[in-house]
Length: 284
Image 1 (cartoon, helix red, strand yellow):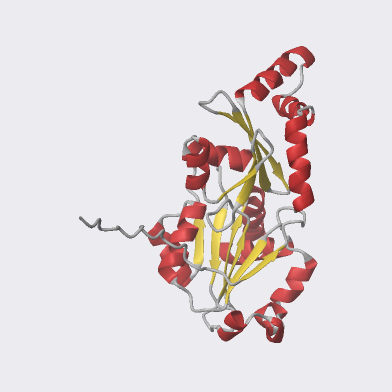
Image 2 (cartoon, one colour):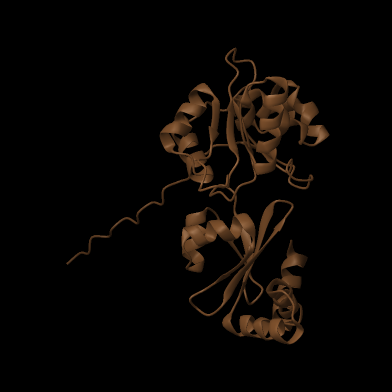
């Protein structure tokens, strides 16, 4: 008898949203952004779906924002405002590319004050507050057509698309930006979106979001722990096994230090971990 071979299921490809990526994340926050631009026609449904997942904005709302422009104020949780503002700027004349970005709470407060003081619309105030935090180089390039790019030096596939259609100023934990996590043996493992990260480490998406937004620690079912530091507005994550975490907790008691400092001391004193990190650093 002949066995019928089943074709392996093809993994769903992520939509291609950007063909120009420029990193400005070394700039002082909150202007530490990744410039993500696209010269090809916008795939509205894919664009809206990814931004909706990234920023926790309802999909129908995000689709409308990407179509008409405007802003989305995050709903207030209890007595405190815990999130800022999502903005989509659309030039009705079609001369400038569509732009999206997010204001943090401090920027949101600055925009509200500017709106009240000068009688501006919230969208105009949010635009002024956002632009003034960007690196000077980026400010100048935004005044130029197509970010001042020399199309003769771009890849043919990018150049064929024509003018830049939209720019997303991003710095979020997204499925389109892989992040590295230092494992207990020093290996660097890449994960992408929140779902991928939470599944890999065995935590809920809510726990993952809290950890990556605010830093700190998240205990694992294995007895280990995830530790996250926010550096220049970006999450830097390391995972420790049960043995390493136990040592860190002992240091907290004996030296009365913070758990993050104790975990750092454990990492520095682990020869296997440090050798693996040095090898990884040498290869990169």
